[in-house]
Length: 383
Picture 1: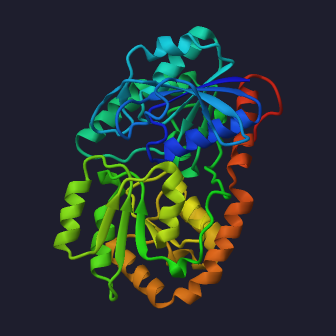
Picture 2: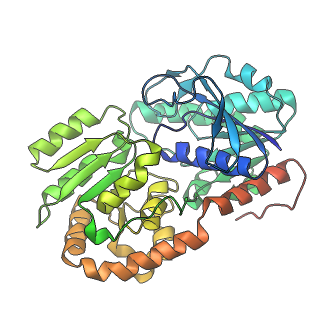
């Protein structure tokens, strides 16, 4: 199958959509499919690792896929809004059996939908999360929902959602009969760490934007009964200077670093626990990656978190889900004072993730959706 994917951002940039797209391309190529990715790029941290557009190795012994990076103009309000001139024409020029794009709020899916319509090829759209914005961002989202999203959702043969939470927001926007739930996965072989009890930091891994609410972690740690070191790793989207100053003012020992995708496992291994205080998420890869490397993951109850945490942690799920800053402080205090109690809980979560959430398994499910859109293979199951 000749698969052409378009995504606003791609590794080496850090992020859930970026990682999802990369792992999907890698595994689909390993299954014998021809995969080409169109993305924005150029410049530090924007994924300029393959500026010559040569085939990028997915992994030694695995498949190879082609990355084509284009200059793009970024806009405020959405981190995913990148305008790539003539992208639709570039996509039309591809010899594709099927077109795929990612991200509600991105402009890439619109260009991909146009290309698919003109080439009379099926188009599959993946929704990673439904933005919750305020101020000008909320206005921009309303405009997007009533213009671009109508075209994208209408043109899609199939719509994949990575969280059931996102699915409910699409009601009224599209034919729900073509919506399929396939969660994110994790490369369980890449995440192997010693016991979390040997970790040094309480860490955050991900983009530094206002919707990630990283300041909540700093505030919570500043109020803990025992002092703790904080590690904040990820690409900055305008928040780092303020967070550095905030940590100094709250007298929190915090280290800030940017990290390449291949370095992410080491960040988890350095950590005693991971915190994700996001305002909204779909199905965060950080949840799975933390569980896969045996790290307790504390998160706001957003997106797929409540369901995943109940599945992974069972009756202990509420020890890891916090509603606000005070709740986070209370849970971190309890964790630090009772680390031994968390050992079997974390072990069980790791075993579940390794069994149920491998990227190979999720890629196979995704390929089945593509085949269904093409009218071949077994019909996909809708949830």
